Length: 210
Image (cartoon, rainbow, N blue to C red; front, side, top):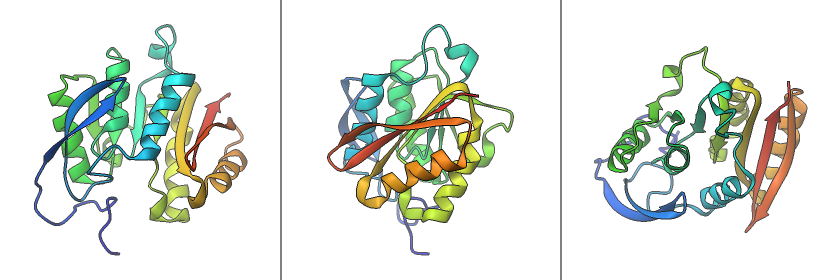
């Protein structure tokens, strides 16, 4: 397979560069680099996802957050989703998970730059197996292919706690409708709906009811 942002160990020199992005409603300077997803800017899909989460809520409130468990950013890239969650919920634990070691390093660096001590960065197999999550936020790597994407979601969606909510952003032309149908069919315990549609992207919500 040719190299993509979902490669475990991207080739090429690791040369971080600084960009300015808006996270949790405020401008921040963060580091990105080649070999990760959207290194030049905050991509449109993630921007729409973060805005939707801010508008509809993310399943984590002051009263129930501790009981439900931490927030999971699945496929964290250089960290925008995890950083936003950590900025919004400074008392919540946020797990940033990615197979790409360069993505994980950048997320660690960015969390440190922003003074966030509640971000835990890990490869998928480093997440404790007994850990469940109160919220799952993701701009999933659709281009890994349908089988790999389904396997990833089959691994992580069942780790939502009862009452927990997943929010996934997917481009319509890359199969947002079919993915929503598949999740609803595959996971009987999830209540699945589309909560936003903007600029060719859909945001899928999946709430664990039981």
